Length: 254
Image 1 (spheres, helix red, strand yellow):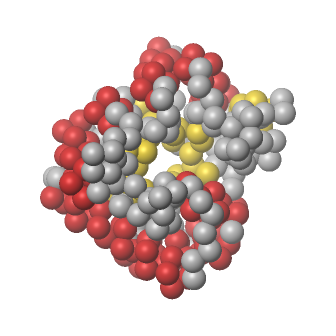
Image 2 (cartoon, rainbow, N blue to C red):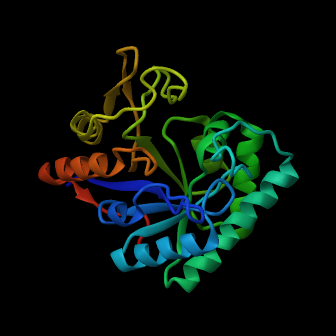
């Protein structure tokens, strides 16, 4: 029987400013990428999300990013290796402490936004993130973009890598994500997204923005928690997968 993980980016609210519906998403996903305070999130809010994830039995990952609250971690940056390694270790360690207080543990690491996209191709910054994980939590898997060079780089460095695809993002013919500034970058139709991901799980293929058929390895599917239709997308997707007899479960045991 086929099995897949469904993940979402959560814990991204900041003080009175609310981002997404963590409570609803935690009832739908099997893994939660929880912000660590650099691109989004504050300690009290992060702790609340972690406690809710614990109650729901949802696996928790450290969603590390650039030090970019104002840009929500989506602006390209070029920190030195010392800075990036230190920042990544700091974020993972902070979430480990909060997770322990919430009665759970950090089970994996997933970079966020611009950092995620940069390290997919940039070997130097990818090496820095890999070095940080190996220094502070070498047994944690890295959740990475399916088909990107970082997958082989991290595996060669001794990390476990879980490949993910994005339910609500458009793909280029080379397997990269369509730039958010371009048409077709973000998908919004819950039913179309569910059908697209069901095909990916059962056939390993999806249609790129130019009509090309591409093949992608996937152990996890991401639905962004900050999009207006996030809950509807996750709900339709979960329902479609379950009706097809596909088991939804975290790739890391809670």
